[in-house]
Structures are given as C-alpha cells and as structure tokens.
Image (spheres, rainbow, N blue to C red):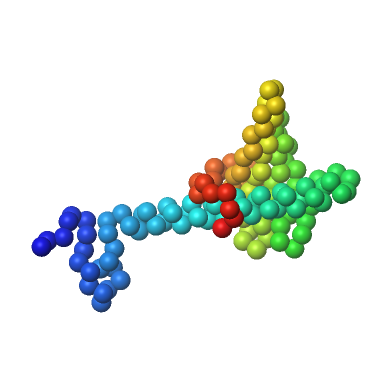
Length: 130
C-alpha cells in the first residue's frame, strides 16, 4: 500500500524519514508559542514581585533583582512597565488600560531595550505556569 501524499515511509535509519510535510513548520510555530507562554508567565511573576516591592516602599521608577529589572515606561493612556530579564537578555512590556466603565485591560508584549516596540505574544491560553 502506498502512503498518503506528504508522508514518508517509516525507515528508522534516518531521522528525516519520519517527518511529514509541514511538521517542522508546525513545531517551530509551537515552540515559539511555548516560548511566548513562558515569557508571559515570567512577565507576570516579575510584575507581581514588583508590586509587592512597590506597595512596601515609596514609589520609585526602577526595581531590580538579580533576575530582572522593572521600570516605568511613559505612555499617554496606559500604565506601563518595562521588564528586562537579565539571564536571557529579553525585554517585555506589561500594560494596563482602565476604560470609563471600570473595565481593566492588561497586555503582555515582547519589546526592545528602549521599550518602544510592542510585539504581541502568541502564547498558549492556559491558566497554569509552564
């Protein structure tokens, strides 16, 4: 029996033999989503720790630990914090927008060192940290 289009026979002598068309692209996209999910969890943890610090001390523009630093980022409509993770050299934005009826919108983004870019995270929608 001939395999369906896009599939190769299972010859275990070569790792390429078990790949299907699109598998690598799918895995690359999923790996990026997984990285974005972990990155979002790290942003949440950093902001949570920063808020504890901020609530126990007079407001300061910068908070720093051995793992990350947080600073305020100016914006005309949102409360924004820029987070730098020292171990990976990654930068992220945590944003909060409060609209008139009292709704709160929270955003998580990848960013650059100047916190000017907003790259939307393609995270996996789960409630538990990975």
